[in-house]
Image (cartoon, rainbow, N blue to C red; front, side, top):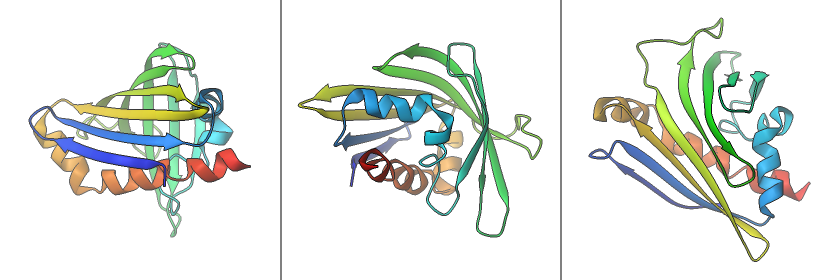
Length: 161
């Protein structure tokens, strides 16, 4: 499994996930830069994603939804704040309603995804920081660690194709 370590820290309001992929950094970067590839790994296997908008540059907006087994939709948005291809990107991540409008009373996280190539493999670090400890606890209670880990673990199969 690609995920090698997961930690959360209420005091610093962070979740950190480390992963290692058997693929060069350029291949891992392609997954996040291409919405059709990202759809295959964003969200747990039981909730496939659809990316409606994917403006992957600073100031750009990304809108998506995940579809559950009963057809229910869980929508979200990103606001891209930085892109350093192929090394890292940063974005705000929040929840959306059924019309893809941001939901104000749900947590928003600041995220930095970094990638380092080592011996033809890619080491990835995913860090999410929340405004408050309560916001972090809310997403922990929603199963974000399990969902994010299962999503990231799907990348191995995609890069083998």
